[in-house]
Length: 126
Image (cartoon, rainbow, N blue to C red; front, side, top):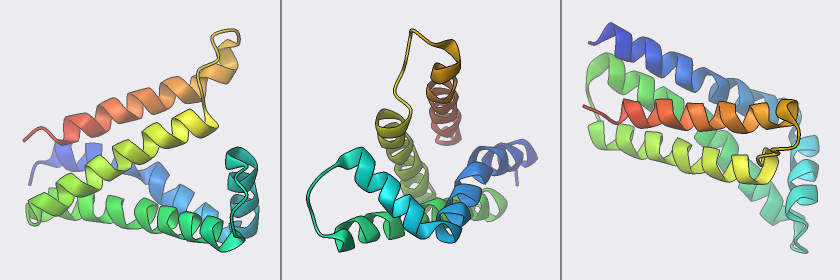
């Protein structure tokens, strides 16, 4: 087990786990927020499905990543989990935290997510 890689994995994925549980606690508000962002006229069940899948991703992917870093097992699942979090972070950044070059403080979440994507990419390195 590589202790530095394990620590990096825990630190990089902790916010996803916290965010997943926060979405569970505030499920209805989270669904409404997504509806407002997408503003697509589809059945509410579609939004519920999307948020449910996001919750699963945010909780299971970090668990798979940390498990692999501890045991070295399930390398392909580890890769899928990391890539899934990268794709999710890109989509979330575009939807919720687009770059605002006119306001430094509004651009901080964008740059934080870009840094997170960089850290996740480094996890893919063997």
